[in-house]
Image (cartoon, rainbow over all chains, first blue to last red; front, side, top):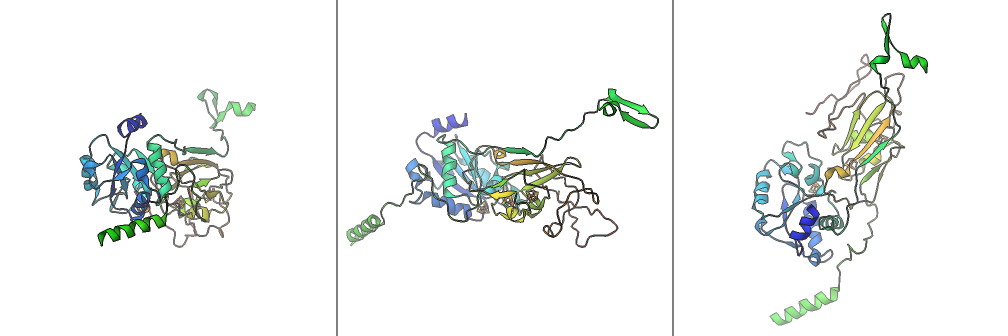
Length: 178
Length: 174
Ligand code: SF4
Ligand code: SF4
Ligand code: SF4
């Protein structure tokens, strides 16, 4: 649904606003790298604008900090709907490695509704372009949650009906039959 | 003058040629020693929690369900791809893969969860590999990080209370 909305609303071009709420500048450099002639995202109609009022997409870098959370929220509210938020980098996705510092509130999703996550510290410019392509529905996302089990651990189910009191012990009858 | 400078600019631009990389159409070669997402191999992992203790982002949570089962959860959200977990792993169960195209609309997609079988040690009740490899691990005993709210709880208990461990860490965050 989000994808359809994206394609409908942002069919022609995405204007992005670049907000750093306290990152280390690594992600800023990568985002700017995406806009250089080498990766040239203006091919896809993506353009950097200087004001949130002109923007369709907010690129968030850095965690939500105590000092910038309010400003970030105000910038988000200034954007005209429909709007998308991209969390770029580990800081924006999960709080970064200083997530337990006194000045870090946590990931930006604590402050804003985030639509797409691009993890990495910093993410490669290709990863950022890939994230935009995922948002536009050009490619499918590659990640899926993974779960492994070393063994199927049999947890015995004790039914009270099979429990029998024997002097001062409780005996599980089925075990004796095995 | 200004026309000349413009001409010069044009000349410079033409000399540079076309530099735009054909990225989305064609994969870019990755630089040497590139580190992407860590991938856990459940078949090799012994559940020592060395990776969890050495992760600077406190990204790997360990939860002991019971004596035999330990859950190791890699969140993937604030991983810096530093490779310390792969470095410290005594069984080489973690590989730093070349995956970087991990953009997603659900942050839970990045997680990896391992359910490990732990054998029982006759001495302390927990399975440990030799101390020499994992000297730096100060954690002993059961771990119960908060898997629901993805919080890392640093708690340590010395087993052999008669012999107190020097520099035993006893901090509890949250
Ligand atoms: S994710 Fe890494 S590179 Fe980006 S702002 Fe945070 S610390 Fe810096
Ligand atoms: S690569 Fe670094 S940040 Fe990521 S899980 Fe391993 S130790 Fe933690
Ligand atoms: S360091 Fe290696 S063996 Fe130990 S818990 Fe982590 S992945 Fe498993």
